[in-house]
Length: 358
Ligand SMILES: [Zn+2]
Ligand SMILES: [Zn+2]
Image (cartoon, rainbow, N blue to C red; front, top):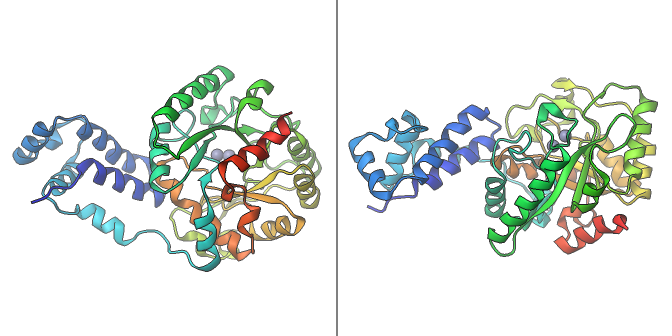
C-alpha cells in the first residue's frame, strides 16, 4: 500500500471548493485540517489514523478525518473524487489560447485585507497553476469593511513580500500592488510615495456607485489621468448573482436577469478614450459575481484601442483558477492576447507600469 499525501489532498479539496465559489466556512474546515495534519509528527498521524482518533484533534472533524484516513490508505478520498468529477470548465479555441498566454494575475487579495488566506498560500496556488507572478492587491484604507491597509501596514506588507520572494520557487515572484479606492473626487486612496513604490496599481470605484453619470465620469477620468493608476478595476461595479462556477458560459441576458447591482452610469466613450490616451488597461474581471465589464463595453473598449488585464480578483487560492471565465468572454469579443498586459513577459509588464512613474 502506497499512502497518498493527506495534506495535499485536503488542500486540493479546499482549492476545488473555492473554485466552485463555496462558502468560506466549508473551505476553512479543509484548510484548518490541512494545517493541523501538516504539523503532526508522521508517527502520531499513522497511530491516530489506526486508532480512529484523528477527529479528536483541534481543527479536524468527521469528514476531514475520513479524508485523511482514506489518503493514508492510498485511496483517492471520496470527497475529492466527487469534486474532481465536477471539475471546472474546459476552454476551447481562442479562449484556450488566451488562457495559455496568461503569465500571471494582476488583482487578488490576501488575509491582510478581506481575502481568506495568507499571501504564501495564494502564491503557492499560483505556482501550481503555472503562473510566473501574481500582483498582490489588497484594499486601501478607506475601504474599512474590507480591512483596507493604512500606509504603515502596506509598508509592512512590502517588507514581508520581499522576504517571501526570497523563499519562493525560482521563476515565480509576487509583485507588489494595491487595489486602491478611487475616491469621490477621483483621487487615489493611498500615499503618493507608496503608490510610486508599488509594481502595479489597480484602481476601482467601490462607493457611491449610483452617482449621476457626469460626476461618475469626472471621477473616473481623474483617476485614469493619475500617473499612478495602471489598471481600471471592475469598471462598472455591477454585481450579478452567480453562485457557482460555470455560470460564466451563460449569455449576458441571463446575467441581466440575475443582476443584483446594476452597472454604474458614466460616459463610456470619454472613459475609454482617456484609458487609451493615458496608456492604461481596462480590467476584465473574472469573478462569477462580477464579470465586469459587460460584453457590450468590452467590445467598445477593444474598438477604442484599450489595453486589458485579465484578472480573477481572487479572495481565496482556488479562485485563482477563475481566469478561464474572463478568457471566454474576452475571446468571444475578439480580444487578441497581445493587447492583454498579463500575457506580456514580466519585465515588459513592469516597464509598462514604470513609464508613468517618472
Ligand atoms: Zn474591488
Ligand atoms: Zn478586488
